[in-house]
Picture 1 (cartoon, one colour):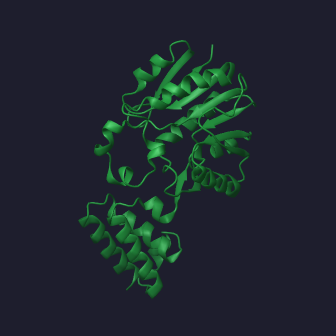
Picture 2: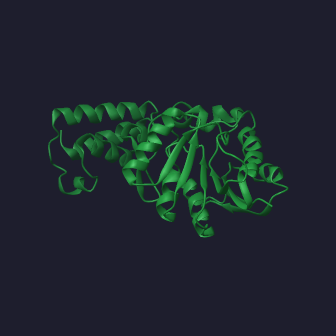
Picture 3: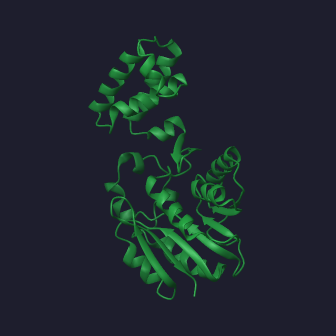
Length: 274
């Protein structure tokens, strides 16, 4: 079995199962199986696979056809130009969350206390720490998620402290300069409409925000106001169609701004504590 044949057969199998971008997926899975970069394939198409490589590749194809996300097979995902480790204990970092990071960077926050709530893989906290060259405190309710986040911070050399906590319960009043969060915001009522890769594989704790998707925002926003200093900034990722409902919860806040993602969906909300 050559690389050329393996990619052709893998692409065909994935395509038959309706997997998006079957050729690209086959290349990613084969590169993971033989421990090489995808660019390697262009110059070595006739290279024979070793038996162990073919066995691994076959297993990865089978897992993907059953709905397992490619990122959980390869155990990695790129975010803001850096490679992060992921597992089924954390949400897979999305491109739209990069907008949240970009928005904060454009604010050019002054050095101070920056808190990331519901850190998951640590993608936001680690990226902000490295880009701003600052210390970040990150929390999550999941101990398993924090283990993944810690490994990413260590691997990338980020200055982040991680705390196992429910939202802001470990923080006093008026201590933070900036709070950022990509909280669970999918409505439980929408569960069956999700892609199977999301619904069946990603952690429910990181996905669902109650029946309407607003449960965490209703808890997080009052607590953020307590923890932030006067004039401190709150930056949130929000779900499609949630901008109005979340804005209503922020009625007493100042300088409210909402930014769309590349698909035109209002995705990031920023405001300041009065």
